Length: 552
Image (cartoon, rainbow, N blue to C red):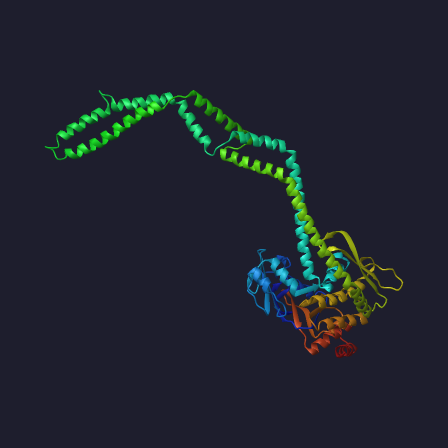
């Protein structure tokens, strides 16, 4: 149940903090006093979209915070899945709207997404406003009513999971069929591309090696000539570096006996002599190895032409890219070759999932049909109590050819308020007052079946008055014995039934208008109901009438 509500800087509200009681409570106030403002603030902590225009003029942000008693509900899994601190007894939902347009949401001081806030809020409060009466004409709402009364929540969830899996597999099958069709249309071209790459037998890094070797062969003569020249400069008997180093080494060695530093000079000359002598020998061998091979060059040029041609054809600059394309083509052709088996396996999977979903859908349908006779009888009795003694109501189940998100059924509510009048869809014939009464009765039945923590009726009494309003108030009082029920009403007959009475009103000063919400004392409540009976001028008759209502 909703324990308290705190609102700051929202619309016409400066700061408002109010506690709520269990059972049946009423909220009254003149038209325009701000009842819709309070509901608007409450809807924000239930996950509705925010508008910065809701922030009180001149303020930077507004805050709405609601405290809930959830001791009768196990929300541990909900908290663990979202990393929210778990409390088995109470939850605080808070929403902050900033003038920058940003919005923040919290559950027990843990930041959460708007979807999380909306999901939890939907489990804590059901706000029924006038426009929700139109839901009665919606086939999906009619289905939800029947499922709630039949206790189909877990079974429907299981079915919807199975149905989603079936539809997903059906989608995958359609995509596979389309892909197979497209692939087979271009199979010849794919095989031609694959064969060309297969015959090319490309090797990673091959292009770089071939290009380097091609450069070598194209310059073989120049390289060979340069290497021989280096060899000659190093080892020529007359002016070569190696013979000169040898002579220098011999000279330094002859000084070692008379000049101590000559030994170090000799060692360094000997090192240089050995290195350059080896280098001269290597130059000669290398020069002999370098040879212009026109056949090899022709092969390399032909091979590179093939690689360049494939790269240009496929718009790929590297051999590694061509190899990836080769693997991709091989995979596509493999899929084409095995497509019949893949299609057969997926078709079997689709059939199995369809069969599973269909069995669950039939189970849902059976449970709906079982509850419907009791549902029709109880609803007729409740609505007859509200001044429609000749009501006839039928919940028709129409079996569909194909399953949908709710099973294989389509639900249609048929209604007649008068004797001998044929049953017709509710949308076609029910008046506003009749729909209000139907919805109240449905809500009371659903609330008993789903055990909503709190239900708020926003002027559900539209189109009724007098004795019927009194009976509607009695219904709210009755199912308020098992849950928290709050009614926003303009009718004194309903207001008098509340265990707790709140009043919404405005106050003005020189610069602004402010909305307030107060809990009324017994004397204040008497005056408020008298005002609702007689208008702005409270008469003695209205006071006596109000006393009688409250006493009753």
